[in-house]
Amino acid sequence: MNAKQLWSVLAVATCAALLAGALAGCSGASASTDSDITVTATSDAKIVPDKARINVSVVSEEKTAEACQKENATRVNAVIEKLGGLGVADTSIQTANTYLFPRYGQPKDGSEDDEYVITGYEMTTTLRVEDLDIDNVGTVIQACVAEGANQADGIEFYASTYDEAYQQALEAALGTARNKAEGIANASGVNLGSIVRVSEGYQDTSARYISNLDVYASEDAVDSGAATAKTMPGQTTITAEVTVTYAIR
Image (cartoon, rainbow, N blue to C red):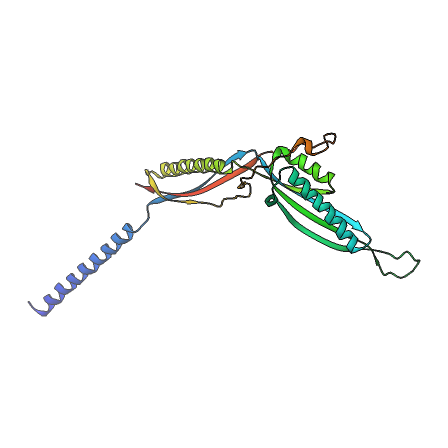
C-alpha cells in the first residue's frame, strides 16, 4: 500500500469514528429527555366554623394616672373572674395589650397661650378570649360588658373540622390534576402514565382550631333580661393546592 492509499484509509476511518461519536451523542441526549406532564390544581371545601376568639377591652378615664390604673385593674379583674365563672379556662384568657396615656386640653384659667395641659388619664386593657363555642359568644360578650368591659371587637372564627375539610379539598385537587393531565395527554397524542412526583402547595391554617378545651356559658351567669346578639359565623373556605407530575408513554 502506497502513501496515498494509506492516507485515504485513515481519512475514512476518522470520518467513521466522528460519525459514530455524533450518533452516540444524539442517542444520549434523547435518553436524558424527560417524558412527563406536570400540572397544578386547586380545590375548595366549605365548612361552618364552630369556634371563636374575641377581644374585649376595659377603657377607664380618671384625673390621675394612679386612680386610672386602679379603676381599670378593678374592672379587668372582675371581667376575668366572670369569664372563669362562665367556664373559660385561664389558659384561654390572654392580656393582649394594656396602655396608659395622658389626655390633654386647654387650660381653664383664662390663659391665652396655646399650650395644652394634662386634664386626665385614659387606660385601656384588652383581653383576648379563646376557645369559645359559637353559640356562647354573645353570652360571653354580654357578661364581660356587665362587669365593666366597654369595648368588644375582633371576632375570629375557627373550625374544629378543619382537618377533615382540608383532606376532602386535597383529594378533590388530586382528581382535578388527573383530569387536567389526561386532557393534555389526549391533545398531545400520548398516553398518561403513573404519578412520578406530587407536591403540596401553600396551606392556610388560620381557620384551624387545635385546642381541646371544653368551654361553656351558663344562661344563669348573666342577666337574662338583657338582649344577646346571635353570632353568625357564615362559611369558611378551605383551599388545597397540588402540583403533580405524570409519566407519559
